Length: 362
Image (cartoon, rainbow, N blue to C red; front, side):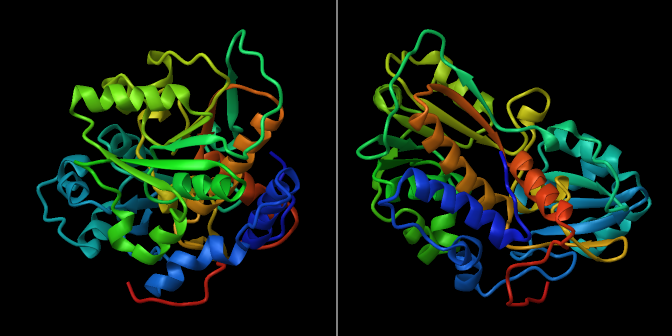
């Protein structure tokens, strides 16, 4: 994945321009919309060590910085067992104090095992990252004996099982290239994005068919299995074991046609990283996609920046695979995309800067 870019807008523009060359009739959004539409709706932007939406913080620890993301009430309930302490940890100030005297790399490893969305970054911005997956590229596990001619997006059937941002953005870009997209959501667990940023949610899903299913009902799961097996493209952003438990993973289905199955994860499908939880802000921290203008004090850039970057490049990867006549499982880690965008910007000699202008108070 080549991303010659001087800043984050250029990273997105590069991906959108590549999509445009493969789908010349598509009316694609601007890089400004991709990076800023949600933030403009909500009137948010990151402020130093506080993320744009306020749920993720960069906390100083003994060996560097921890990216701690606590978007769910259940995350706060895990803090005491994570830090093995009975001390109150009911706010960010208390948590900041508790983390300051501890080893961040060890805390990240322990917290990830518990299902917390965490990331660690060394205090030195030029330090090598201890996690090899950051530098890994998205990969396609090709179907054996599934030969195909080049395929176009026009009228391609896309089933989108994803939620939040990266997957739906990918689906929207495929729709703009002519695909017919069906967004499938769970009756029990609706996509929280439709309540948090309703205007942006409508824009991401414009032109998509909506289908709500009860995943606990066998009949609904059978229906969904049929839709997935017949799709030209499947988009999902679950940890691998999630769909396996429902019998809706790609290996459990009978797929007799060329298909690109896009699996967006925080850190890839290889154990143990396949079980780690991650969202756009903390994943960006893990990849070092931060503003280091103040020596040894990193700051967040963008709004959940790993999400829009992944959405654009995932769409490009899907379209390219179809044009090449490929079929298989496309493993697409958000950390890899964020890490490579960081590398390309840094190697041009430019600093990583926030593409948003609005400020907020944490």
